[in-house]
Structures are given as C-alpha cells and as structure tokens.
Length: 327
Image (cartoon, rainbow, N blue to C red; front, side, top):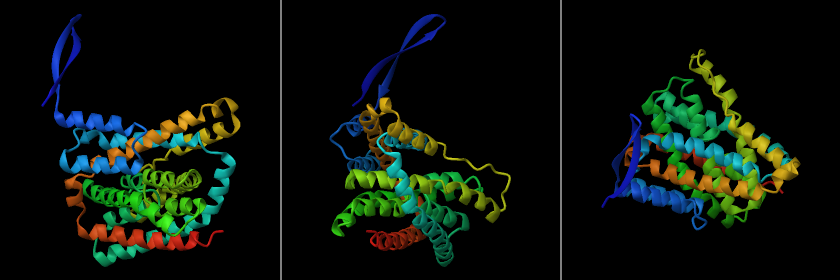
C-alpha cells in the first residue's frame, strides 16, 4: 500500500511535477504524530505508542530523531514556563537545593564504584553516572564531547538512560499514589530520581498540577549543574581545550515564567501557551519511544544496564526517604 503525492519543483523557470510515494510505514508514523497532538492521548500512552512503532514498524525518519527530540523538548519546557509563578518556583528551588547537591555528589561517587565493580568502560560508566545524576540525555550530550567519548560509548549511555526513563514514566506515579505522597513530595522526588526532563514532566504532570510545577523548577535548576560537572570533567579526563555548552533554553524558561508572573498581557494567553508546551512534550515522548528500537536494546548490553538500574534504584530510594520527611 502506497499513497502518491504530487510535488513540484522549478527548473529553468518552468514547473516540473514529480511523483513521490509515501510508504505505509511513513503514513502510520504521520498518523501517530497527529494522534499524539490530540487531547485523547497522555504522555505515557505516547511513549508506549512510540515503543510499539519502534519494535514492530520502525521509525522512518530515525536519522532525524535525536535532533527533533532535543529541539521539541526545549520548546516544550519553555512553553510550560508560561504556566508557572515565579514566587512558587523560587520556593521550590530553595527546597530542592540541598537534595540536589547531595544527590548529585552521591550519584557520581556511587556510579564510579559500580562501574569499577562491573568492569565497565570508564567513559561509558561516567556518562551513565552523569546522566543519572543530573538530567539524562542532555547531560550525556553536554559531557560526551568534553571527555572525547566515542559514538558507541555515547549510544550505550543514552540507551541505558532512555530505557530507564520509559520505565519511570509508568512506575513513579504508581508508587507515589501507593505511598500517598503529596504533590510537593512527588514533584521533588521525580525531579531528583528520574533522569530526563521529559519523563520528569510527564510523570509529574500525570500526578498533578502542583507536582508538575515543583518538578519542572527543581529539575531545571538541577540541569544547571551540567556546567560545573562538564568543567570538572575536563580535568578528570585531561581534555581542557573543549568548550562547555551552556543550556540556554533554561534561561528562556525563566523568562517565560517571569512574563507569566509580571506581565498581564502574557498571562491572558498562558493557558494556550502551556497547552502547546504539554502537547510538545507528549510528542517528544512519542519520538523518544520511536528511537528505542531493537538495535538500541542490543547495543546497551547487560552490565551497563545493571549499573544504570542499581544506580537508579539507590538514588530513587534515598530521595524517596528524604522527601517523605518533608511536611
């Protein structure tokens, strides 16, 4: 089954029509994208749909997936900023600062010893630890050029983090409800224990509006630690000539939040802008699921995933115990 589309190009001042076919796989993918932008699908459903397509149909535009998810996540986070109040965000950031510092240091140290124990390649282990400690794929993408990581090492670390992100999106809300965590407790816990911003926002958004606000603010504040960790990495791996990339979208998120708080004109449209941000996040999770094909699962291997799981369980349990002590 194929559907033909007429497209035109201009050559020598004359229009020339060409037939370009859309395969069944492309058509299914496009329909799935449209469905993900509808109000009938939740972020976990979008991720699951992406996983199904990755395993049984295949991503027709896989070569563009990484750039697309990276850009969509940044735009979506900025959109979510239009739904947040600066005062609440500052309070949440202050509450999460101590947890952030302790958890990052503890995760990096624990990850180092787990990597030694499982005899995992030093750079692969370091990338998994960094992704777990800070903000998943974004941290891995920022640190990998600094330590001169190879493509295989980056792929294994990203695959490990994305697989665990997919699990967290489903598991964390269930645990939160089972333990009757408050909105603030769950938001704090998910921001500390879930790797990627996309899955943090997806899980917290499913739990409640206040959890979403706390989780997004604490997670983005946590993401700023990419900068000192990346600089430190240049000394650890003796590669001081590489420039560290700063996540500029965090600044745009702060500007959006300030505009929503102090500019009445912007506040009138905040519901629509936040809605676009949530729709973009749902699409981002779908694309992440589409990228987790069998090749990714095979490349990860057993020992890196064991390091990732143990590190994730330890930080999740420690963070959960800490947040449950909050009033």
